[in-house]
Length: 75
Image 1 (cartoon, rainbow, N blue to C red):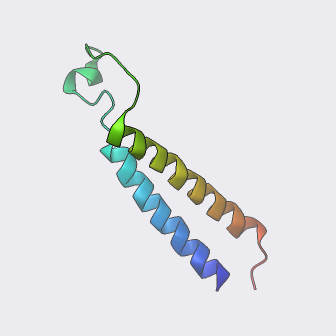
Image 2 (image 1 turned 60 degrees about the vertical axis):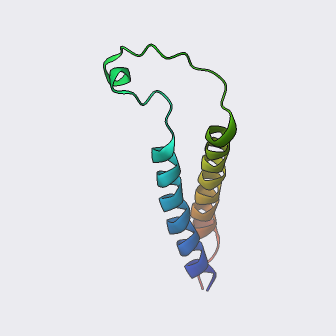
């Protein structure tokens, strides 16, 4: 029962974390891929900051669910 919940939480957090990483737009212009980025990196604000923090929370949930699956005894 607990193992199933941990597996679902791991899969859901992994998918959401991938989506959150893909949605982040930091330096994503075509010129940035070739080193010709003229953008100035500033502090994160608004939705970008919320998405960044959500990515961190999802990563922590993902890692904790993996560790819980490793260290909890399977019944």
